[in-house]
Length: 230
Image 1 (cartoon, rainbow, N blue to C red):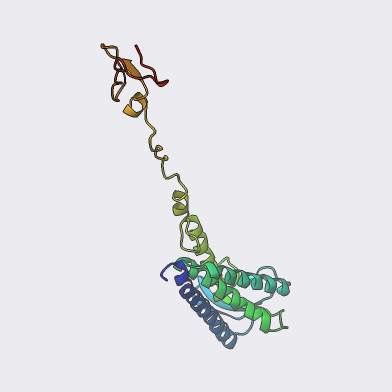
Image 2: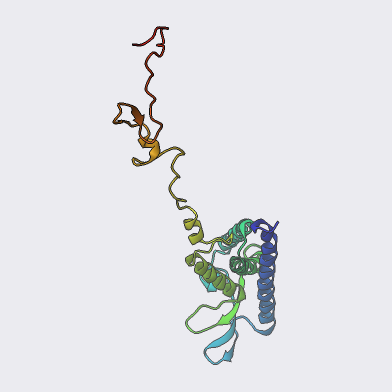
């Protein structure tokens, strides 16, 4: 089996690998930030363009929406479940990469909310990357944004998660052409239609146009009632 159904298990493996890589990178960098910085401490990396600043976020991604960690835990859980549901239809490598990044990012922040202080399911997400005029974020947030941007691009290009294209689906629904004429059907000038017309010859005989001439009855031939005609 070489069709899309045969490729879906491989796409699921790729999805899992991308998600695991994103989750691993996010967790490792958060642990490094926790080990190297105190809360609120900053370190310049590229002047004012890039700094490492350790903060704890109880809200949504990018340190927004503080104070409702349980709500964002439920939202992240719903995102993970929905992506796993979509994975059954995956047959596109770009879509697999996009959903894998989103899945890995969602899991990275979900782990923080589930297991980090101050309480289970109310944990604070570790953020540590700071750029000018932007909330502090982490690798998980970056994966979500990149995966989401890729998903939007694929949607605009008409590429579906099962590997088909919108243009292909549209072209396949057109009419295949007019039905052929039924056998025996003929136009007004064809011999089949003209054969039903008759003509009278100069000798008084009648013949169908395009057919055999009618044979005149010989004198003395018997009529149907057994007599002879005059």
